[in-house]
Each structure stands twice: as C-alpha cells, then as structure tokens.
Length: 216
Image 1 (cartoon, rainbow, N blue to C red):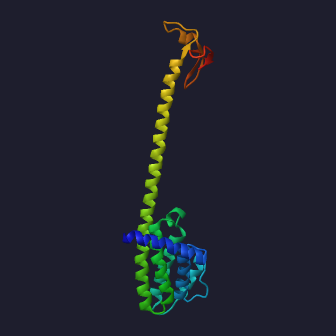
Image 2 (image 1 turned 60 degrees about the horizontal axis):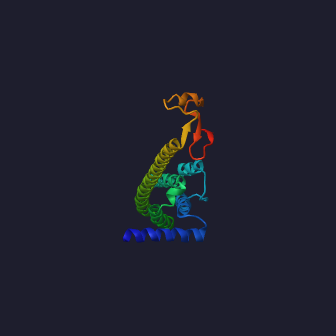
C-alpha cells in the first residue's frame, strides 16, 4: 500500500512539475545538475559544453581541488544517464518516483554546497539516489521486454489460429468441389490440372453447390 501511494505521489509531482515549468522531472533534474556543477566549479554559466566543463575543472586550484573535480564528474555522469533516458522508461511510475527524490536531493545540493563537508554529504546522497534510479530503470526496461515478449506470443497465437482456420476452410473447399473432368480412378487430378508452381497447383473444378466450373 505504501509503495502504491509513493508511486501515485510521484506521478502527481511529475504532473505538477510539468505544469509549473513545462518540463518533466528528468529534464529539471538535468537543469539542477548544471546549477550544482556550476556552483561547485565556480563558473558563471550553468549550461556549458562538456569541453568547457573540463576546462573549468582544470582551472580549479587549492586543497579542495580533487574533491570538487570528483563531485563535478559525478554530476556529469548522472547528467549523461538522464539525457539517455528513453521516453517509455521515464514514464514508468517507479522511475518517476526515483527521479522525484533525486530532484529534491539536487535541489539541496544547489542550496548547500559551499563547504567541503556539505559537498561530501550531497555527493553521498546523490550517489544513493542515482543507484535507486538505475535499479528502477533496469526494472522498467525488463517490464518492457516482458510486455514485448507477451505481445509477440499473442501474435504467434493469432497466426496459429489463422492457420487452423485456413485448414478448416480447405477441408470445406475440398468437400464442395470435384475435379473436372471427374474420374473415379483418380486420373482426373492430372487431366484437370491447369498449372502449378513452387507452392501449389491450380485445377479446373466444379462446384457441387451451383454446378459452375472454377479454377481452384
């Protein structure tokens, strides 16, 4: 019951975020990653090309350089994950739930990453929520695969049913038609042959219902 409630709330939050910003939670997470990374590296812009982010990392100096660069690269990896999210996956309710808590974690990171201790706590928290997101994404992908397999199995069942129907119709057809000319010793099949190919043959036959002659 608690899981279902959480999933429902995640869907509601996603809808609210879309209404307020015109973007999904995934898109807003990606935006917050830029803000947090900019704050950690001290850049003016929050939307840099990856090459510019690397130059900003190289420009960092001081005792905290290693820790700040590592945090920046952690955020970059998370950003790549979010950019590669497929539409059907991101619409999964469990994925929305994982994105929701990640979104809140990134908001806290943007607000409080001025000191090394704050950045350390934010890094651990984000890493944990990113792992939850990966688990949810994997589960959603597995559900999609199962659904595809089930749909494929249904298609095969439909084909088999169609084949059975065709075979039943073939039996009815054989009962309604006789070879023309008709010969009780069976030579009528050869005499009535109009043509044949790799997958079948066409015979001149008479319909016993209406007495008309057909190519069958």
